[in-house]
Image 1 (cartoon, protein in one colour):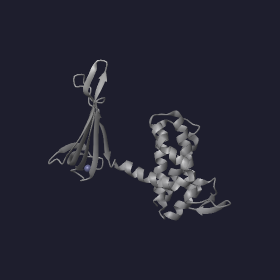
Image 2 (cartoon, rainbow, N blue to C red):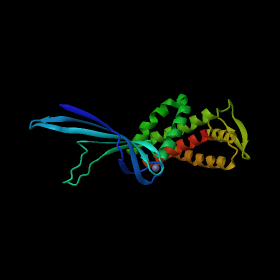
Image 3 (cartoon, rainbow, N blue to C red):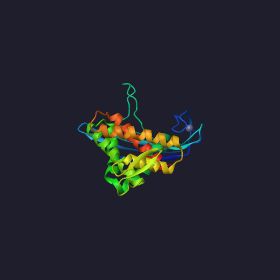
Length: 249
Ligand SMILES: [Zn+2]
């Protein structure tokens, strides 16, 4: 038989001692509101019926950091399988999720969605595969490495074509005293030309140019070369961060 229960309470002075995702200090968090959901089920086998042997429980809390005052949502859940055993020294394994996540993830997420939106009509097939590839990279999947690098290269070239459509036939422009050939194949030059028309800061232009080229080189070489899953993951993140920064110029 299965049973479930929901309890809601607005605790007066409940305080949790946690590391804040925003200010990164380990500090007191005031619990503003709390909901606990619980359910259980009997387990039946040849030995008989074990009442409420299968159970799961989650607490949902709105908390506020006492240092930076950021308000967040925190979910903590556990079930009978991840419940520890004190006698055997096995700790409880709580699954914890906090929203909003940390700043770095938020910035990356914002950049990623801007870049994806721009590219969706041009290379939806690549964009749709990104989450799955990224997840597999996290698991160290070898095939995912080569797919990830191929996708990165397509993302960079489609991005270039989207922000600075190549001229019908090859053109040359002078950027920072250097002649740049603009064509569909020279996609890095298209990005340079775009950056030049969107920022007057020489140091920003230089930094973007000097980041983009080695990144693209590694992505292209890496398809045939030895690249670890960690490096592929880093190249992916760098691609999105850089393209996101360019869109924000
Ligand atoms: Zn904080």
